[in-house]
Image: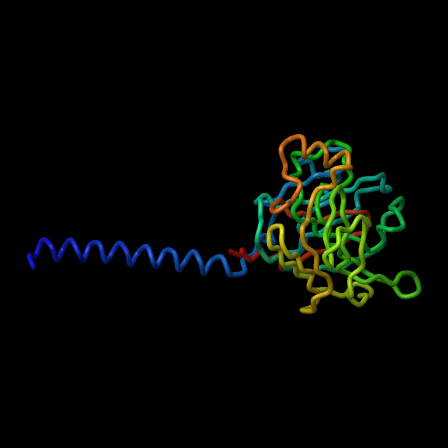
Length: 265
């Protein structure tokens, strides 16, 4: 075999080896946890608060304190339907998301009773920029983050609510707005570890402190919901297989930490 032929074959071998290495590295990166909140600022996230434009952080509601992502109402006099969310800017389909949360302080005066120690992770949601100025919540599947207080409220966490959407559980399309999980309640300001596993239009799982507490599938738009109808008219498929995640602000101060994402194939 000539030196020229040997050199050519070695070059081809090297290219193939490099391609296999690149594919292997990409596959590995898809199954590794990475932080999506840097603990310093809100880079990579967009804020939307009712009655305000996308990107406006009204009264500094969302902020970073001591490395935590915080929802604070210390600049408010009262809550006036100021529902808000902070949206991660990357559209996602198949992934795992995990974080720790805890409720702190007292609910802001004027907040609805149901919003006491109440927040959520919105899944497969529309982006902040597509919401109307006075829209309360993004069209999405809401994984509820809830707390309880002795003598006042006992509520499991990990429930599901469906603003402008429907889900399927146990093979049945559910029209009820909220469904309860099997989680136990968590009291006071203790940290709770929460994880969601999202598989496109297939299974979505809620996991609390390592325990599976709720499972749903076939997330989809509600064709009878006026806000969902706007998305449908714009070409959004009825069956939801991707979208944006967001964390809610609903009148009770809350803190988040260790916000991490793992992409799945």
